[in-house]
Amino acid sequence: MTLQIIPFSLGPVHTNAYLLADPTTAEAAVIDPSWDGHIILAEAQKRGWRIGHLWYTHAHFDHIGGAAAIADALNPLPLVALHPADHTLWRTGGGGKLFGLAIDPGPEPAIDFEHGQTLRLGSTTLEVRHTPGHTPGHVVFYCASAKTCFCGDLIFAHSVGRTDLPGGSWETLVKSIREQIYSLPEETRLLSGHGPETTVGEEKVSNPFVQE
Image (tube, rainbow, N blue to C red; front, side, top):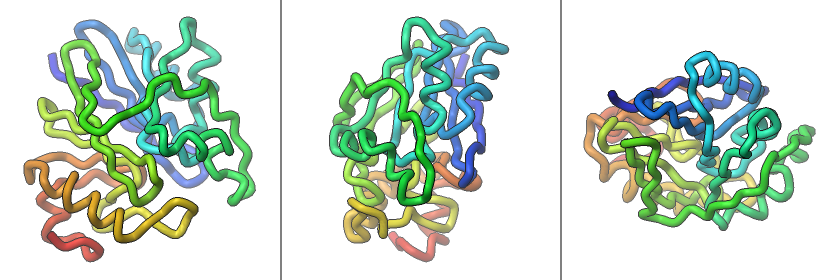
């Protein structure tokens, strides 16, 4: 069976979280446990899935705000993975204080993402691509077998991630999109950190911020 993907839109800025599972093994991971971790956890439990991993595209508060609630309910703790360039952001609560929001960031990251790293979930593999610009340690996760890229706040449907927060860089963001997103097959689904899904082909021709 193919990779199962359950999307959620949670929290004060409607951040997308994604619950992934290999239904054969019931192994599950959460990409960006954005907020209200109990909602994500309940969905996994309803399906009989075991959450063993929390994978972060980056460490902004609205992408990690639900991690503590998930981890507190699980034994053993899920393994948290984050690019090392975002560790400082994680340790300061994901920048939430800038917006008057304090969060419990949950378990400390135990795995450092590297560009080109392979992640495994049952029989499914995903490729980690380092895509700085929104934050220094931003990454995306590309699953070739599912023709899907989980792209965090790098690129959205007809928009792109903001670069005016600490660590952001417009030039770097554009470079990451052109090299790591627009190089993917045009039919690849882009599941972003906010808003609806889109495709590589759609963004190449219609994204007003980054033209191929």
